[in-house]
Length: 92
Image (tube, rainbow, N blue to C red; front, side, top):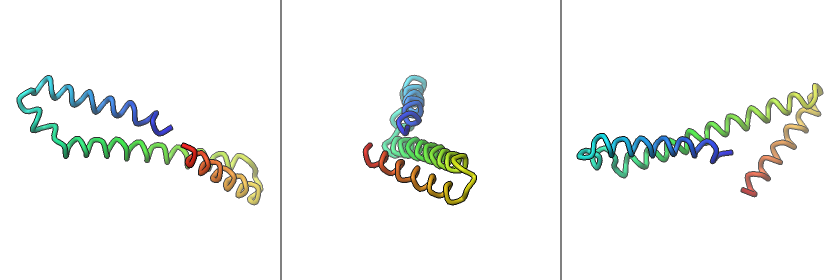
């Protein structure tokens, strides 16, 4: 799920770097530095992580609430879903 959101953003950043290389060949080395590259990578990973985290939390909330109208059953469903998500995270 995380790689689905990282891949397009990484391609967009790579395309932007190539655009700078083609349009500004003499200033490319001053525009694209190690610092700006690290910032772009960090930004892509952070945005993707937050995006996936929001999707997972919303999925858990919607699933737990739709499982039952009884509070105890909903709480059990939510804890079961959380445990499954943790297991999936540990397997990956």
